[in-house]
Image (cartoon, rainbow, N blue to C red; front, side):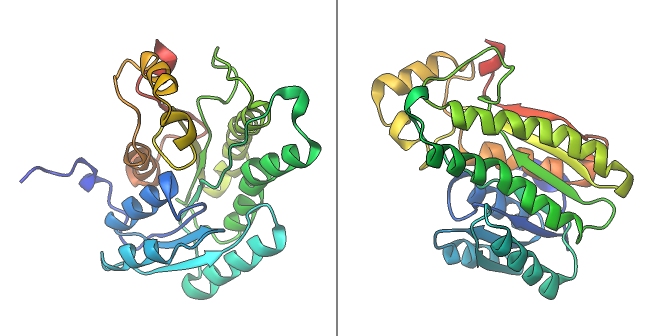
Length: 256
């Protein structure tokens, strides 16, 4: 039987909360953490009970909490529920995010606020609540993007998305410094092109898909499980000395 390379990264008894976990990357991360032994709160604004059932089938505890991460009142209720159930939180994965596409001059204030609110403010609100529940050795993992800025590449029509993701990198670095004394590690994962519902419109188009593939030395589009594997590592004891950094999981895109 082929050995699971993730088996060394055990998370037995850890309590985790993953935002935007009903599908895509968030779902893959929630399931991967559970397979390594963590109990998981599945958060989303769409139905996530199917993910809870999958997690419970592994023998781990799980529950679903509907909350919009851009709203502080809903975030507070979610973390209060985690406190009631578990009394602590060891792992927070700030995955919830949205992608909107508009020419720069056509981005409305409402659309800008929506993207920044969920992608950036949501990570701040969830992290602030999580820290109050976290013991030493806890982990916060933020999901950024290769479209985070400073990477030497640009993307048409997603200025608000790239602004939010670039700010996440800065937020991650500063959180890592601020929270190091509490024994909490903060890192980010920056995925490249990953096949999810959010990228379906781009990747289902043959021309667009070929353009993406031409930039990826690995020769394939990423899978949600590729990102989940990095999250498992960052959540584990083996990543204890990894703090304040961004791991680019992009198949070599930025190196090409």
